[in-house]
Image (cartoon, rainbow, N blue to C red; front, side, top):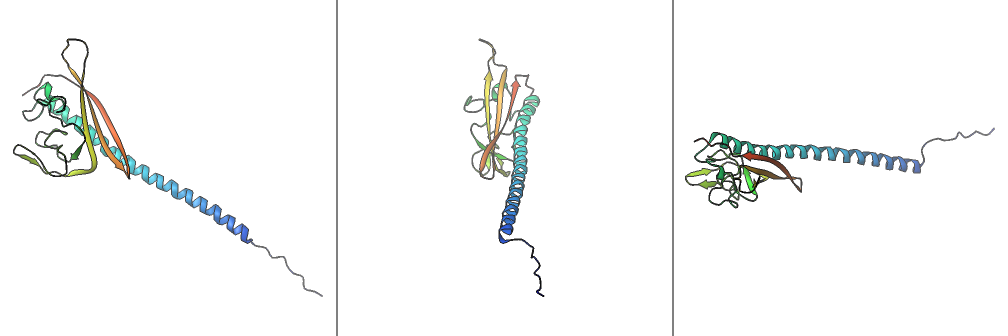
Length: 186
């Protein structure tokens, strides 16, 4: 009597290779999704910081206008950038680093906190040595809203842009408002 051979069962080399390829594709997809989730989370965090910087800039402008200040906004003409109104405008034009402290006037985006570079900002006898927020730049644009011929400008459009980076990608957050000419108190 001859012994009968039992049929061997198992995976062939080809089946194992196909399973490894499918598994690799699945793991790669999961890692990609995880990476995108981390990037999106970082993006949201950076965007919130940029939005808060823009919002704080506008809030400080309204507070100074409403409260009046001898070192800040003491008249309607002060609500302008220095390139538009070099005599009265108090806001710095172009992109400037963002500092933690708004300076002695309490208004973000003016000479005492928006100097170029990372060194201290000195205006008169005051020196702002607060830390520069790394990776953030701010630009304030102010334009008149003309409502008709021969009518004095009573409103200005204020645009605050904040640039920031997500990895190597530079992006911007923008906040826009309108400031009206209200009585100034001293």
